[in-house]
Each structure stands twice: as C-alpha cells, then as structure tokens.
Length: 276
Image 1 (tube, rainbow, N blue to C red):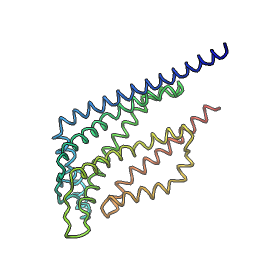
Image 2 (cartoon, rainbow, N blue to C red):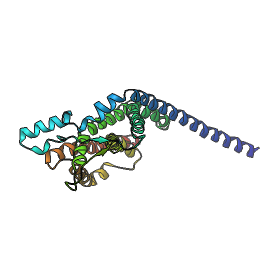
Image 3 (cartoon, rainbow, N blue to C red):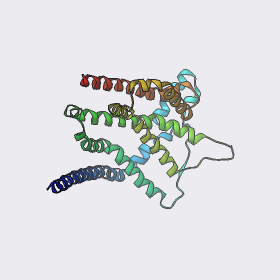
Image 4 (cartoon, one colour):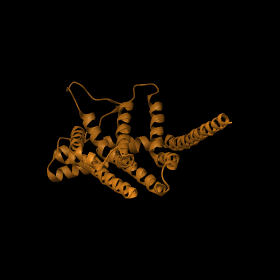
C-alpha cells in the first residue's frame, strides 16, 4: 500500500513536470508566431527597411552624420565629420541578396516583437515569484521593453554611424580599395544594434542577479573602475579620435551601470526589510 502511494505521488510529480514543459512549449510557440508575423511584414516592406533604414547610416545626409559634422564645424573639430565619402555596397553571392532579405526580416521581426516575447517569458517564470512580487510584472515588461528599444535606437543612431565610419574608411594601404560586401555590412549593423539593445538590459539583469543574491551593491562598486576602463576602451576603438565622441558613447553605458548599482541597493534593502 505504501509503495502504491509513493508511485502515485511520483506520477503526480512527473505530470506536474510535463505540464510545465507543455506550458513552456506554448510560450515558445506564441513567441515564434510574434517574431515570424512581424518578420513577414518586414519582408514585404523591404524597400523601406533597406533603403531608408539600413543603408542610410553610411550616407552624409544621415541625421547623426549631419549633426556631428555641424557641431564639429561649430567647435572647430573636423574629425567629427564622419561618413562624408560613401563606399559601395556590393553582392558577390548568387543568393546573397535573397538570404540577406530573409535574415534582415527575421532580425527586424525579433526587435519589434521583443516586448511580446519578453511578456511570454515573464508569464512562464512569474509563478515562481511571491504574490507580492507578481504585481511588478507589468512594470518589468515595460521597463525591459523600453530599455531594449532605447538600446536599439542608441546603437542605430550613434554606434552604427561611428562603426561604419571607422570600419568603412579604415585602410592598411592606398593600393587597397574598400568594396564592402552586403552580408558584411548588414551583419555589422545588426550585430551592433542588437548588442546595444542587450547591453541596455543591464539594469534588468542586475535586478534579477540581486534578487538571487549573486551580486550586491558592494560588489558592483568594487568593480566600478574595471567597468569604466572597459567602457572607455570600447568607445575609444569605435569612435573618431576625439574626446567628444568617446564621451558621447561611454556616458550612457556608465549611467546604466550606476543605475544598476542603485537598483541593487533597493533590492537588498527591500529583501532585508522582509526578513525583519
């Protein structure tokens, strides 16, 4: 009789585990539907995506290029005039343009669908939180979506023109002409934009790590100087050789790190009050 009860309890646990897998499967399916749905829309409007969005940062008329050049002329720094000479983007593969069309559509679909995908992820992990913490679900979805889209805009309007200028105009010899392949150009832009969006999720990551007691305010303060060196080094690599551009890139990242410290403090303080 006792063995039957243990076997029944084990089967119930297995059913619970299978139910969790089934729930996860449907969250993943819905997330995929969102991404594919927006990707189809992006596929249809490929002219706008490629001509107006992706190929624009390499042109002198792009808003970031114009503003930086105007400001550089105002303060007497000619190096702020970036992407003044356009380079050719070519395709050397038979199916290159078609494969890029699909890849870009999926990337755009993921970026636009990110709030919906994160909502599905949050809906799956939400039952693991306490009842008092579940009321922050909507705030977490909004905050993560806002930070991701803000990072995407930061990457597109600031990091992309600077990266295109640095990599597109870099030359090891006057006898070598830059003819940029379409796949290389698109991959560079999408990598910069998505990476920027992910980096802007740093405060959200610090929040969860603080809740799990994996990081603390003292830990983040201890490695503040190390993060400063890394951020300044990266900004110096991708920007023109002037202080203004380096500060323009590094400042938002430093602010995100300081915001993470503040969030970690609040989490630690709140957890301490719950234990009292």
